[in-house]
Image (tube, rainbow, N blue to C red; front, side, top):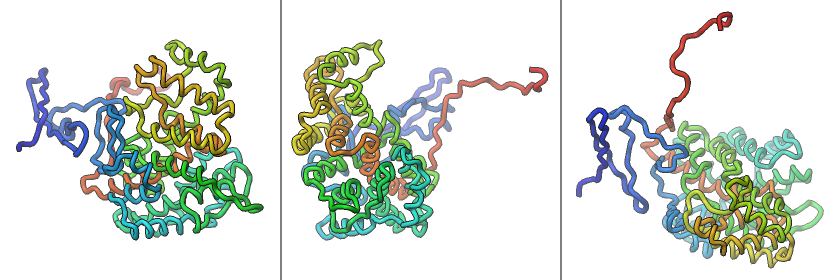
Length: 431
């Protein structure tokens, strides 16, 4: 069968060319335009890359129209119900679900590498106590190459794997230490007898004065949240990791770049913005008023945590996390708190209001994750850090996939220049 092509015609010059059409295992066909400038002397213009495929990837598939999310072909619903976060991490890194012995080896590897270098802890002293934890995360993760430079040959597959394991293992430790620094509390060492998510909660909330036993409901909630946030195709932060990695930068620098991108309120900071919005609304009696404000196109107020850039249907992660959210609220005794009552009321109205239904503005994963984190005692400024812990798996998987791709080249987007035309320099005394 002949390969499909797309014919591009330039009527102004009476020229045309055949562009190859790529077809993945799922998803729409994609027109390959790499030779367009060479053959036709033109670039494409696509602000925000709304219709541009930047790479080949076998990691995550999204169908926004149908509300589908798959990791390596496995539906997110199945993984969230049946899998663990480290099993999903293995899947994203290696492409297949592990056998029992493979999973045990991988879990042992990660759990026994959660410690960070003692000298790395001194770096935290350079940050003010009220520094945002994401600022600390960006700096500390970026510094890892100064401590673990024994495996930074990106062309060595074993070095890439070691760096991947270190990143995944140490992210919860670095994150918990960022929180402890903001509280002026001593750092808590990780424990090898705890699972990944339980260990994180232990490092967050334990103290040298007394033992801390993580609530199983909280551990399960974190497990599910981490699975749901582990990857999401070529979003802003993942694309940032890939672009930084295309220059052959070390993996720790690439992940630090991803963290910086994730920090933006339009990306990973959305769940923090949800809680800020709820606090602005203030009381359940004000919900109707603020819903009307959200409908008013002339009012600057916007409902955070509703709708999604990719999903034009219900976010499949939101369906899963909604159930977890109500379980956590019931377990922690927050179901009747004013803020949680407000959130539930807002959710109820949005799911029934024709304005939101017609525009497919359903509550998304950010709406529910912020409520869960608040119920678990995690402060607002740590919400995006939680996202970063989970997404570090996806970032690392994409970085490894990109570096192993023989066709990989340094990223170099082009532009439409609309500045001043050529002009001659005028001496300062004649301007």
